[in-house]
Image 1 (cartoon, rainbow, N blue to C red):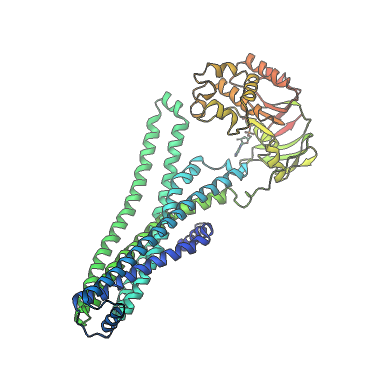
Image 2 (image 1 turned 45 degrees about the horizontal axis):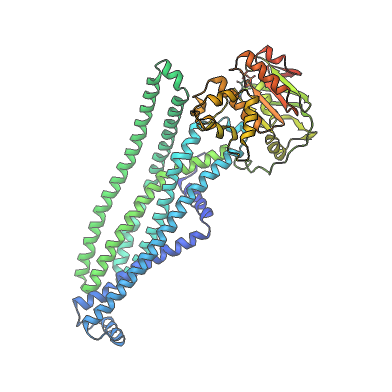
Length: 568
Ligand SMILES: Nc1ncnc2c1ncn2[C@@H]1O[C@H](COP(=O)(O)OP(=O)(O)OP(=O)(O)O)[C@@H](O)[C@H]1O
């Protein structure tokens, strides 16, 4: 259920605060000092203007300033003005340094916050249960990690800008109050009216922001659907459908963004009219009430300076609420991924021994899956898994590699039940080769080592030999350093499968799973490959899903899966 905008804004501020911790106080100190120094430099204008405009005035405070400056050795109006201007420049220098530090600190906080949130989502994703991940749309995740994270960064910036502007406004309001309480009270009333208008409009900004999140996700979904089915679409001239869908979503997205920009422009125009009316009223009232010219000029300056932060607060609030749905969407993804369960314990490697399923079952939401499986597989066995499409073979394998947790019954390795820690440790001992090979747009070397710098070139050569892929790599223009395209599109299906198998062997797994992993290789080549795997010494436990009877003939034992029932 969608929570209220203020609750959501508070959660955002809390998330930002828990990231920034003590740095919030550093930033607050710098923001406060900057505002104070700005106020001091405006107030310094009063004695400067009074020396310039009315040097012979008999006001008590003018006499006090004159006496103070004379005591400091500045006796003539020119030397007094020089001392005051020197003080003004000093304050301006300190202020410039403080603002520099302030902006740097706030910038670091903002970018660091986005980095932390992105990492948090990725860690949650990496630790989430497979049964949760599998139900999520990829476009939702990529959109959140890219576009919405950027909008989150903007929201953090607008929140910080809003707070800075509030501090500036309070300090300047206090100064105005000291100089002329009546005026300040008037200005505060005007500001409160403006604040009320902002509060009334935040719900609509947030609704528009929610629409933008939805449309961005749909846009990403459409683009990734197009890229995923690029070949089929190109072959059948089906690109037009994708293009039309993409354009329609984009138009809707643009309309929402335009509506928001219209609202912003309306607010800005309203603000400009309101502030010029307020400024005119200040001058008129000041003259009518015979306020000292120097004080009146300082007041006008203060009110003119207040209008900047006031407009900033209004714009920052509007933008903040417009961007807030990105934060909500990121939080929702973490909830859907099971953030609380995702704090996985450190992995524990289960002891060497049999892999055992005892009356284990896992049924997917639609009712398909494995209804009952009782199996014992000795280390080093070569097991074939057969059965018709949709029978539950992949579900069975997913339980055995620890991706799916049995909903009833249990799984043991080496006589010990797989709890969360042992399941994580068990996956360290597994190599899984899917049908599509799963290769990245990178070199053969990096595809094989999967980022592990400890894997030597000799080990790669041995694994490539076993997968009968040495010749294929030798034929590539840059050998191991050849980039093989998105998902390995520059290779044939069988070549991709051979590389994927070589990568799996480099892990020296205790359990090697081949999920129709050689079905793109010709029957003779597959038989030779499986014979080499069967001859490995020591041999990992091998589980192989295949629809080829010739391949099954090479296994020690075949497990049959039918309508979710597993028979050994
Ligand atoms: N994530 C899921 N959500 C809902 N149903 C699912 C999910 N994954 C699989 N199923 C269903 O569970 C049943 C078993 O699927 P599974 O992938 O285990 O079959 P399989 O024997 O490996 O099939 P194939 O040989 O076609 O790959 C199927 O009916 C499938 O539609």
